[in-house]
Image (cartoon, rainbow, N blue to C red; front, side, top):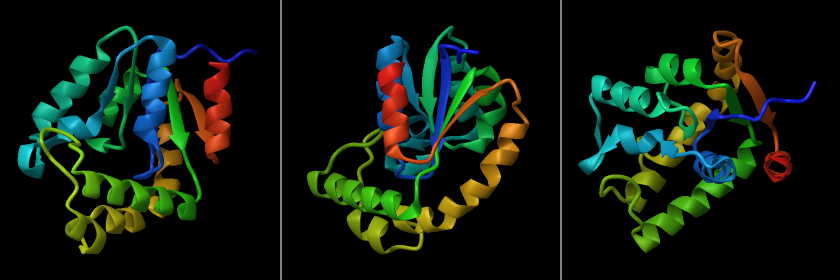
Length: 176
């Protein structure tokens, strides 16, 4: 049996795994819009969007015929995952993801790259703080590996593409 060509895709994976980069590439290949859940969640000044607002953004975006959305937010998983036909899980080794995340954080902080809604990396906070992105990685990387299979069981309709290395994801993308 040949896998279906995806039309409504969720890309999930730990912080720094490359969700957005892959999601943009998939959307480009499929000719559908891409959205990053972080852009809906992080309002100006790093304020978290109200739950209803975030869920409405997910619902509005996923009401389209075709789309690619990346993110790990469980607070609207019942909407996005239910409407998706394909889920891509980037489940890469921790050392690889950590070094990618560290390089990305340093680059964004040094270049003052805007992320979402005027927000920018704050190097001191992200590198040294208990609330920073590196600490978040250590709190969530292994936890995600344990929780994603149970989450997937709630959405048996999904075609799941579980990639353990970037090369696997790149090979699949080339064949798309």
